[in-house]
Length: 147
Image (cartoon, rainbow, N blue to C red; front, side, top):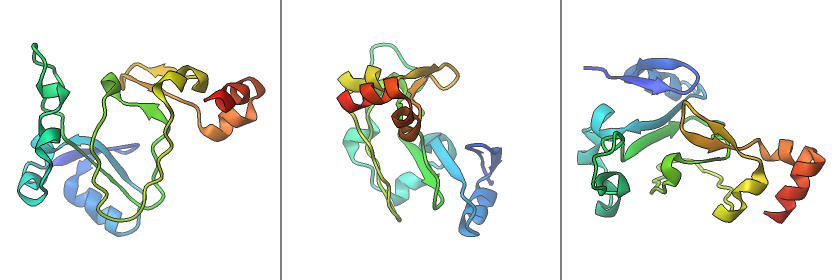
């Protein structure tokens, strides 16, 4: 059966529709989709290093609601982006890039307050304004230069 998947900015659509539109060149982004729930067959196709299959979400005394959400899948078309953010629970992860290129901008965790974070309650993550916006504001730019 064709599974419905959450597509950033488009709600949900069938996986077949997502990949068909992606192949047609549409700039769609599938973000943080749990493999075990949506694409369990990928475990037969991609060897995820054992360390990442049993991350901190699986190693807590109390069962976390996110334990079946990792590992997860991200698929983006050409030109898609993800804004500067800190992942839920300040987690870290392993990323496999199958095709194309990805540009990373990283900052030391101690510098996060200098980047004017805001709390995104529904997503449970800290988000930051785009770097160009931070650079255009005098006070934010001064803080950014210290980061």
